Amino acid sequence: MPERRPRLEGKVAVVTGGGSIAEGIGNGKATSVLFAREGAKVLVVDIIEEAAEDTVRMIREEGGDASVFVADVTNSDDCYAMCQAAVDRYGRLDILVNNVGISSRGDVLSLDIEEWDQVMDVNVKSIVLASRAAIPHMIRGGGGAITNLSSIAGLRAHSPLAYSVSKTAIVGITQTMASDHGRDLIRVNAIAPGQVYTPRMEMRMTDSLRDLRVTTAPLGTEGTAWDIGYANLYLASDEARWVTGVTLSVDAGLAVTTPATHNRERSEAMEQAKQQQQ
Image 1 (cartoon, rainbow, N blue to C red):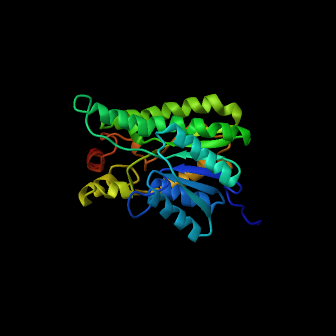
Image 2 (image 1 turned 135 degrees about the vertical axis):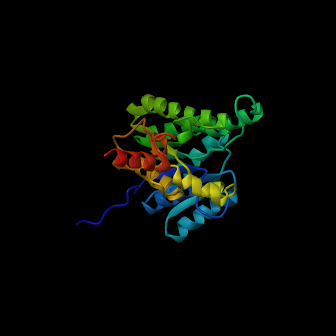
Image 3 (image 1 turned 60 degrees about the vertical axis):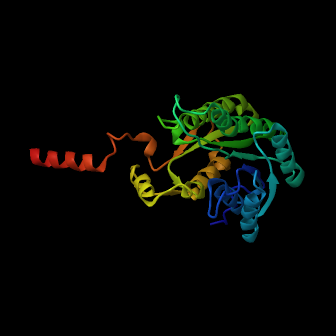
């Protein structure tokens, strides 16, 4: 059997939110590392320079090729500079992963409107700005792949409101960009992570809440940033050459369940009842 070629050989990727906010591996860091392992040159973008540097250090220790770019992706000039830096350093731009996002608090009655605006800027506007800066480079290079990080909160009822609405908007943006730029050979997809355990979650997690999160989905196992990274790797690779406009749930099956359909105690009680009737 011939030796397998790296899945992203010759590709150049920009990963926003490519650092982790604490020790450990977040979604952007895992994605950047996996891209580099598969042959891509990676521009690791983060608003915190030290976080991006840590990701680049990990990639270089493994023999990969990556560099740091500090940017606020809610700023249009930063997004254009980010994409131009990828082209200047590596000669092209093939892959963009829009991985930046923040959460919020409150329902429609209690939310803070300034916080609402901030969530929409970071979670939604950043995708528009980064994609607008990247797509012309991709067109000149003959095509590309964009992946946007949504959430299962964008696929089903979820609180808080601003976060849920922003993640729902990402699904719509993904579908529309996929339609608009398909003939440019640019594929646009989204990933909807479930209750993944990352450094960001660890900062506000108790042991009991962590256990509860694990048991709420059908698989009953805990997701990590590597699960999201591997989904990003597939969607960026030529293996997904015929996949666009899709939102891929990576959530242990949580998005397809409800409390009524997935409750172990209820299922066991129903099974016992059936056995008694036989």
